[in-house]
Length: 455
Ligand SMILES: Cc1cc2nc3c(=O)[nH]c(=O)nc-3n(C[C@H](O)[C@H](O)[C@H](O)COP(=O)(O)O)c2cc1C
Image (tube, rainbow, N blue to C red; front, top):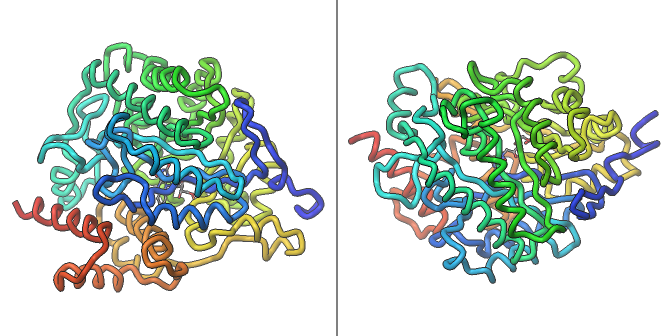
């Protein structure tokens, strides 16, 4: 049977909260890096999401929105400082634009934890984490030096700080419900705060937030319960989780499987999105970090085998994200019943209407696929002996594509060369040309890092 005979990715689906989703193609979360001075939604965000809104996705997941402006992943993330200081009208407009063509939009909410290099906090104040264990950027001298500067040892969180973060997740979810979004997704993967509580490598606590593998779930359960207490029953609450950390001493697949079962038993979750890796070992970017079997390679998606293994341990709907590029691969994944949805991130920065191509029955399978592209100028960066530099450059390149659309009002350009673009950015700083607020902030971040390195 070819995937044209049946098209599982074209089928509708209903989440446990009652949210109706018209097809199985999900635009996965990608931080847009478009936050300006107040880090609230702005014209750039609206223009970007207007494009995805028209793209016939079943569901849109936004880039991560930080629940605490002191500990973001990037200074250009969208952030919530407090319920009182939030301009709800800006979030309402974001919800309106992204859902203007009927596609529900779910906001990913996050706290970067030990992976927060800087934020709206006093200069040199370290980030916070379950235990005082810094993120490793690699074993080379350069990596260790940079780590001390950019990702210093975090401070172990007190119980009061844990409770404060739980409240912030709930406040942020409440704001998103009031703004009119269809739900929130707790970012529980990639080594950020929630993920670092779930991992035995970064959570060495001896209290009931970490003494046993199940205790490591307590922080997440408190967040789920706090959110559920303040949002309507029809509001979707999902979570993105690691199938494994892909690093020595980190979360294993067996432990992750237990976590899926415990979440199922706990309740309150409408979907789980499966990913993997951290910035120590960025498996989510599909690099050499994942020991992939021949079968997985054929199935193209990185975490599909794990999804098939956990499928019977939970009744919660599953999204698998990472590596999906062809309609055949996506249809086969849903048809095999390993997952209910396929998440796609990077290609959607170049093809905002990708689902229209994938769902076009007049196209043969070999043409119903995402654009194939090679990012020019990355070879040099791959030689730098620092974890995540290669995947970081790839992320940056996709951010530039989003910025072409959002800031410059142009079409994406797959021919962009990483090195030439960096040189251009640096000359922009030195010539002090008129810059957008976003570019200015990015340049300030770069200058800050350089200054830190020199002092
Ligand atoms: C520019 C960029 C930003 C990203 N930001 C996020 C994010 O905010 N939250 C998240 O969970 N994953 C983020 N990711 C990871 C993607 O959601 C996804 O897991 C990964 O790219 C693999 O999917 P793909 O192969 O379809 O690109 C980001 C990826 C890229 C390229």
